[in-house]
Amino acid sequence: MGGYMGKLGWIDLSDGAVKVEEIAEDVRRKYVGGTALAAYMMRHFRFGEIDPLGPENVLIFASGPLTGANVPTSGRYAVIAKSPATGIWGEADSGDRFGIAE
Image 1 (cartoon, rainbow, N blue to C red):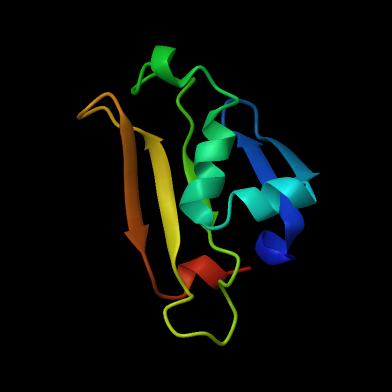
Image 2 (cartoon, helix red, strand yellow; image 1 turned 90 degrees about the vertical axis):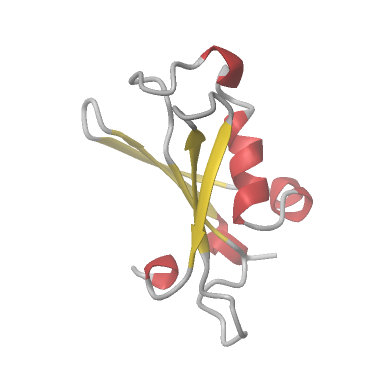
């Protein structure tokens, strides 16, 4: 499973720091799809304690493993964060070329 190009990119907007790390093979197999991978990533944050409007809230842009492949409806991506409207998981899903943009 080489989806997601096998990597996660972390960008800290407070200082502009960028970090790229490999996604372990077992994680890629267990959490297939952009939303599932985002759920895995959220485990690393104290999601229940995060202020949805605070600087500790994360904004995850996640594409699926087939994004960019010549497969119908594969050009999708999701944007995930703790929702200020509900205080729980918030997600928006969209398609078009953004999911495959370089």
